[in-house]
Amino acid sequence: MTEIIWGLGTSHVPSIGAAMDNHKSEDEYWKPLFEGYAPARKWMAENTPDVAVVIYNDHANALGLEMIPTFAIGTADGYNVADEGYGPRKVPDVLGHPELSEHILVQLVNEGFDMTVCQELDVDHGLTVPLSVYCPDPGEAWPCPVIPVLVNVLQYPQPTAARCLALGEALGRAIRSFPGNLRVAVFGTGGMSHQLAGERAGLINEEFDRAFLKDIETNPTRLAELTREDYIREAGSEGLEMIMWLIMRGAVGDDLQRVHETYHVPASNTAAALALFAAGTTA
Ligand code: DHB
Ligand code: FE
Image (cartoon, rainbow, N blue to C red):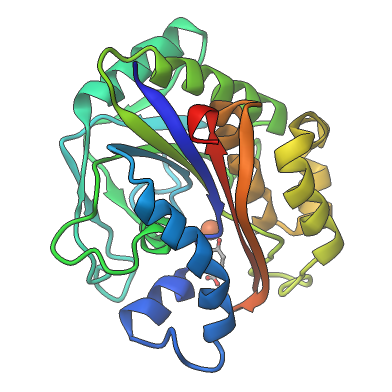
C-alpha cells in the first residue's frame, strides 16, 4: 500500500536557499531561522520518503507569462535547476518519478482536475528551496525523486483556496491508490505574508499568519472559504502563495499530528514559516 507519511508546509524565499548556498546559515541574521528548522529536519531525516510531491509555483522562470496553467504536473524523468538570472543554484538537478506522476495525472483528470502536463520543466526556487529546507546537504543527489505540481498564484484569476483543498484531497486519493509500497511526502510551499512590489511592499501580517498556521492543522475549511481577495488583502499579493499549503493539507487528510512549527520574521522581506505534520500511521 502506498501511503503519505508526512506533509510539510514551508516558505520558499530564494534568499533562504542563497544563505545555505553561500554558507551563511550561522550568520547572526540567518541563525534564528535555521535553528527553527532544526527539529523538523531531524525528524524528516529519521522518516525519509521514497518520493516527494512538491506543490509550488513557478515565478515566470520556466513558464513564461505567455502560458499560465492553473494547475500542472511534471511527468519527466528529471528536472533541471532553473537559471533565474544569476546561473542555476549549485544544487543537484532533480530526479523524477514518471510512473507515479502518470498515475496521479490520470487519477486527477478522472476526478475532474484537468491538469496541464509538463514533459519538460526547469524547477525554480519555489521547488529547490523547500528541498533545501528538507535536506540542507544533498551532496551529489537529492535523497528522493520528486514530482512537481504547479499552481498559478501569480496571475488573476488564480484558483480558489477551496479548489486547492479539493485538489489536495484528490491528490491524496491518487497517491494512496498507486500500486506498490511507496512512502510519500507532500510539500506545500510559499508564504507566509509577503508583498514584493508596489505601495504595500514589505507587508507582513503576523496575526493572519499565526491564525493560518493554527487552522491549517485544525480548520482547513475556514482557510478554504477565504477568497483570493481576502488572502491578498490580509497577506499581500504574494502571500496568496499560502493557498498551496491547502493542497498539501488536503492530501495529508485529517489523520495528522503536528511534529514541529516555526515562524520567523523577516526572511528578506517575507514572513517565513515551516509546519511539519506526521500523517496516518506515522502520526
Ligand atoms: C521572495 C520571492 C518569493 O518567491 C517568495 O515567495 C518570497 C520572497 C523574494 O524575492 O524575496
Ligand atoms: Fe514565491
